[in-house]
Image 1 (cartoon, rainbow, N blue to C red):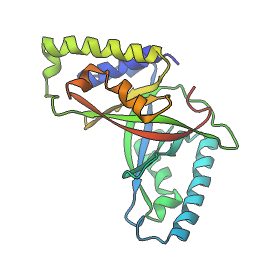
Image 2 (cartoon, helix red, strand yellow):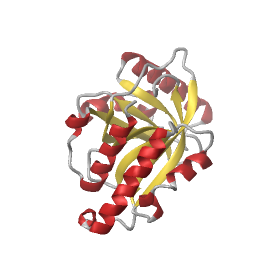
Image 3 (cartoon, helix red, strand yellow):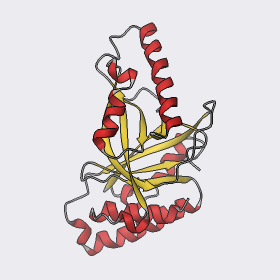
Image 4 (cartoon, helix red, strand yellow):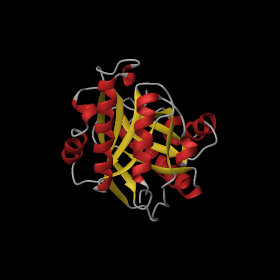
Length: 231
């Protein structure tokens, strides 16, 4: 994986919002962040498990067809249940795939759609499905991020330190995936760490100069992802 190019591209996206993905061979993917739906709590456990089994079969089918390049559940009891990364021509096409999922149709899950950019580093999921834990981080706007402050000398110097730290993390092979959201919302980008614990992922993220000053924040989740999809 050409992690250095991906990470530097990410930083420029986060700093300026300019899109020059083609120069760095970035590809648009559609990311569906899966959250618990309105019928999660009210559905009987036996029925919920039956629907989730159908959902799993659909996940496998999407991975095998190439519609999904990665998919898997998040650990813990958070509102976010998991996510899909989809190779679709548009957000609208990707949404039709998500809306057809048995768990979405049953109201157990809902999909929040976002356009996301990354190098096309994804491999094929191993079959039969074998899952491993990585740590997925959503980079979000922090309270100390102000509109236009990326033009100030102070933030530009901080940005250089930010880039240097991310390149360092990529060099350790512990930061294995990164990319920006192609939208100007609270979600700014993604880091994925392949480490032994959530605490280690938190400690690595905490070395980021932007996170240190609360210009960016990161929400980290254990993510069960099929072996083979992330090199």
